[in-house]
Every structure is written in C-alpha cells, then in structure tokens.
Length: 259
Image (cartoon, rainbow, N blue to C red; front, side):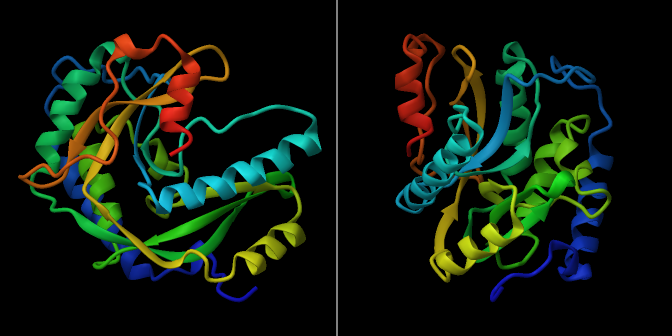
C-alpha cells in the first residue's frame, strides 16, 4: 500500500538516539520520589498528549466512525475514552499523588521548548491472532523530539516506563491510534481511502496532560493537570477540569472525548 512503511524499518540512528536519551534521563532520576509511589501502578491516571482541534476533531470523527463499525461487528458497545492522543505513561500514579507528579514533570519540561508535530501518513501494528492497529505517524524536526519528551517525562518517574517496554527493545514509538482491524485487507483498503488526508497537517506541541479516568465502566479520561513545555506557558488547548466538576459523566465525555 502506498505510503506505508514498517515501524521496524525506521532509521536505526533515530532509535539509538532515543534509547541513549532515555538512558541519560533515567540516570538523573535515582533520588527517592517525594510523595510518589515507586512500585504501584494505577490505571486511573495517564500522561498523554491530546491532539488539539481542528486537527483533533477530524481525527476523532474518523475514529468514532471506525469504532462504530468494530462494535457492530462484535455486537458490543465500547466508546472511545479520550480524543486522539499520544500516550506517554499509562498506567501512572494514584489520584492522590498527581499534584506532586505534575510538579516533577513540569521541572523536567522547562528546558524543552514547544515544537511542531507534522502528521506523516498511516502505519500499523500487527498483533497476535491476526489483529491490527492502524495509526497516524507523528513527525518532528529533529526526528526524535517526541522520544526525548517521553524520556524527560519518564525521568521524573522512572518506574513508569511501560510504553517503552511494549516495543520489545526498539524504544518508545509515538503514534496516534485510529482503529482496530481483524483483517489486513480491510485495513489496507482503509489506508488507501485515507490517502494523504493526514500527511502534512501540523500542530504545535506545547503541553502534555495528566488525565484521570472517571465515571462508571466504561470510564472517560478527564484533564486534571496541564503541563506546559518551556519556560513560558502558552494558552492551553484543554484547560484542566476540577474534581468538583465530575457530577455528570456525559459532560466529561463530551468535553474530552469529542474534541
């Protein structure tokens, strides 16, 4: 399929720089974590980047469309829990510790200035049992800018590096998931239909978020902390929602999931 390339065929130099940067950042973080658990992981919290509108809106419309097809095929209802995103850490610390965690991450990100992320078309992960995940490639200049951002975040909490481990030694692979497939032929047809729709659009990566999952199952992700990059905070794409606003899960869903 035109425009597709395998993650395993990415420039090895990029992967080496990513692993080297992560090692350096983790080496800096050997002090005990003040007020933050060092072993327990909590699936109630996550650190991620939500793609802002209008680009995020376009991606979300496609994700909702494909999720409806997936649910109809398997006779289930599994709504999307947050907007299009890049996950940095999941699971993360307990809800009680997110304020301290946010301070630690902020200290690491002061020296990383905002940078532009350009979408570079589609790629996919091949899983066991002939399952696939279609995703959009985020590109930067320099090419490992997102990997360095991830390494800085993890260096503040070095026990929470599951995303890097998932790639089986190849380093953190930033991606924006679009849809699941149980047919490679169907996925390749969708890639052909997408064409260059998400090749070229860009946005400014100026902040990351700590989110919590709230509400009954299925839960929805809500922004609790906005952590800016650089020394000067720019106006936020998504302001933080106070815990007192969790009265209605449908409001939460509309706010975060339907950007």
